[in-house]
Image (cartoon, rainbow, N blue to C red):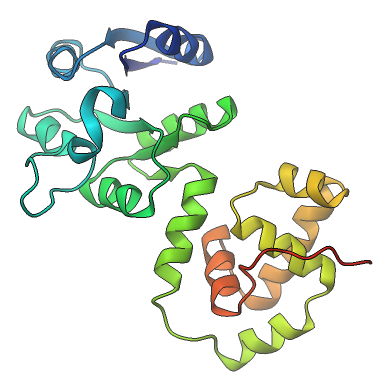
Length: 233
């Protein structure tokens, strides 16, 4: 199998070393850049499939969509103007919803928080390779909640299902909305990961939902996005 080619970009060598160790079994790292100019020169010369780019070297205004009166071009448009087909995964400290939406609107393929678990990096890269969009779960839930808040109110069927959820199911859904993955939900409640996934599946099946994003929208529309209360089973 032909290994995909990767460029890593950040100011700090220590972070680049860590990133390279995380991907070395799956990718060929063909370059490490410390400045935006280095990154673009390297991307033109080395035909990388994906670049992982820190906001430390590009800044949030270059990462995200153009704003009125702002500095102008985005990293995505710079890559497009250079004729590059390289996918871009942003590595950022910002959990600001508007910044995330701006970056995704601009065409970023991945929005990965620096504080994220290392296991998030490879899924983000694989989704980017396919031309899809990947967001760290914590910020993904915030983006979905922000968008869902502007959608229509819950319908009668949703309201009926919401009223009949067990206390445990309500807690699981609420924790998922907060950005926790199944393993973290299980640890918080004191049950197994398989039990979390079973309850999640049951709720989604009753509603005819096919994704976690749909489940989060359902939760927001029905007021299940508030802080969970400790409830005796």
